[in-house]
Length: 213
Image (cartoon, rainbow, N blue to C red; front, side):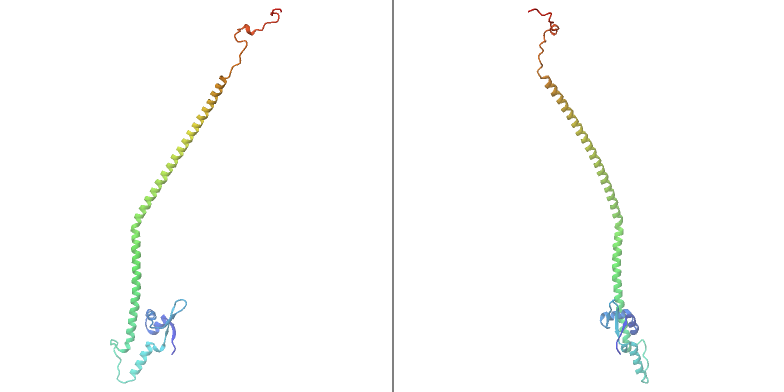
């Protein structure tokens, strides 16, 4: 009979094993199969090789011979080799899953330890943040005070410059006034012809008072 393309679950039901064991056998190359575009695994099963049919054919051949008794389930008979192999495959699949679980558990523990370390360091980091905030606040206050001091110094320097400029302007004005007064004082004065005559020298003689020629 031709092989049938079945899923892992269907193959497990036909082979009387778990889907994980079917997946493991597929990975080991013991069962032929393929993956579709979605990544799903499909395997090919020959119905003639199923455990049920082999067991049924074996029982039929033994029952046809008189005097044959059914062996005990506790004895390891050739017919039980399939079950033993199935159990071995299942054990390997479980071991593989257990290993994966242990790896994930190790990663989880490492992540937990890392988070615990961060949690332990959190108060220290918080204290550092608070200290840094206070330091920044102090720096801002100091900068504000320095800005205010600089503004006061600039205002005082401006007042001094203005006062100095006003003083120099007053000195220049006073100097100009003194220079003008000095120039005026050094100018030659006109000679008055009547100077030294006294009061009578300013009185002009009348024509009648003049002597006759």
